[in-house]
Image 1 (tube, helix red, strand yellow):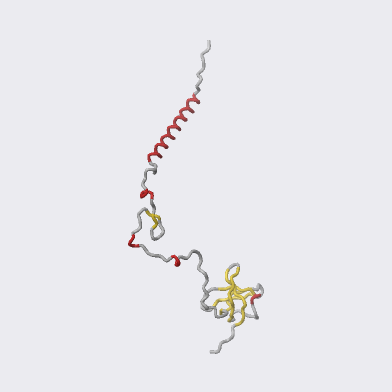
Image 2 (cartoon, rainbow, N blue to C red):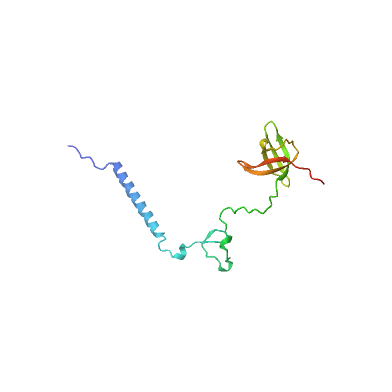
Length: 157
């Protein structure tokens, strides 16, 4: 005579315990979400304001600090270039560096410490380092370039 084996193994019991525990944890999380739900909040509790510095705050702004802004004064993007008539002709500068074998150099503009690149093809006449020149500026791929470079005429003192 043989004894009948149990239909439930140890592994099946463990899996069932695990499933029950997961269901219980899920129900607890659901109950916690319901308790903390924001459905019952008033409109005032959900309102957010922006202060004068652009920060989000929970308090309404002070009406006494209100400033009137003219719509035409608001600029979105880069302002248009306004020609003031200051472009009286070519700029003046001094050749700071010139490498004839490589065909390029730099000009330091009068009244500025900026070094402006130039290529020998923009020279209108032969020049050397230290020479005073007149030039125009042109926007290049890597910044401003000097173009139409000529020796500056000596001004009488």
